[in-house]
Image (cartoon, helix red, strand yellow):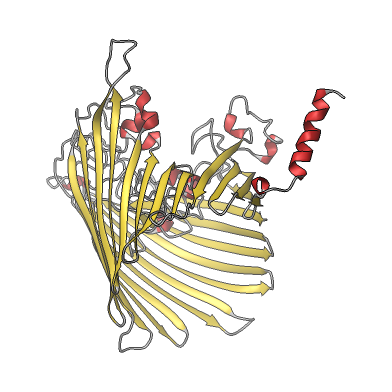
Length: 603
């Protein structure tokens, strides 16, 4: 018998033998197949990164055409009582159209269309049973165990791309300690990992990491948490000694401190408070054009939030939520949450006008905006205005991945620089819940003649004097007809004013968004739910002495079909209106049809 025949025979015998070394329990639950379908009358089939040729075109940011499939295989191995390991095998739809016949399309010129599969989320979890250590994790995590203002989650498609070491253990009194070393992605390092000057290369970027320690403790009815994190960005020291190793110099430091607590002071009154302080040190100072997500020179600033919830008022069904927030313009954590976490109470800007001025976004976003603590970025013109965010949505740009979303996903607006308060009142009577929100936003970056090379000139406009007011009313009611007819109404007003350069009236900008939406939904039969909604929205922009009026109607049809282990959903929208999205002084007719559907099976 040939040797090559003996090898599989011996392997089969070994696998058949019982023994603790092979008693591994495998769990594949959560594995899934996801299919997405986009259709729209913009007829944009981007084969590139959002709006650019050559890369990913699988989101509505860059296309409204095509069908894709993603496959995710989840594997969790319980090796022993003390050892667990896992990994995800994830394919990327990334412009891999069905019409590419399994990746045969332009994969040589456009590799993202080749239907690649990647290993993601690989981790090892150890629970050794020590009194001082509950568990240790090596590898990938979504890092949601920390605060979004310090170390937070990324967008869901990258949820466990960030890797590191994490340890957690108990302390006396029922508290816990946590510590982590998190490998920092290159693009979150200074100058996107390219060193202190634009477009250089530095090999030390591959060993950079954020270190964080966190402590939590229960004190009576109160819960306290404190954390400290730091990041030192290094570059290789010039060295002419070829055989004597190479040293490094630290040219950027980022430190973040957090203290927060929450508790019930009495029945029906809950309080929460959080304080954050960051310090960024740059040496030598950055130079040249604004580049990367970090401050250009040294700065130190803080942020805090105060919340009070009143849930046991004398009036049955009435509650109040109050929030004060003040996030300084210089607060910076390069690992703050970019998506997935809404950090403020307010509903935020009017989503129906999101990305107004881009033809593929005539209908805006179909879901309310979230507020995130990631730092915004700003393209600065000669006059000092943010070209990437001309006063239409506060901070809705920057390191928050809005370029990679579908129209039914929530965009994120950066709250760095915001200060103000929100009052949210909820009341229910006759099985009819309703709410009223009042929010006022001022800005810590209201300044004049800020330096074009200052620490934050790559984040904000050089001249600003701005304030924003938001009013939202919602009401819902279920009519007991046709098995239950679910209805809702929402009215919203957002007024944003910015005088920009105080001495020049020509750049004064006032934006007023008015809108309402009504919807009706019904369980059409046991597996199918459908809803129909209609909204009417106006946006009046006054720039200097010129007024630009915009109006649109949005009709939406949604279906959700569910079987055990299978889900199908779809949203179709028809947008019709008239306006001046590019502010040319000429009114034009506006129209768009767009559809997104998905099918998902989980096994």
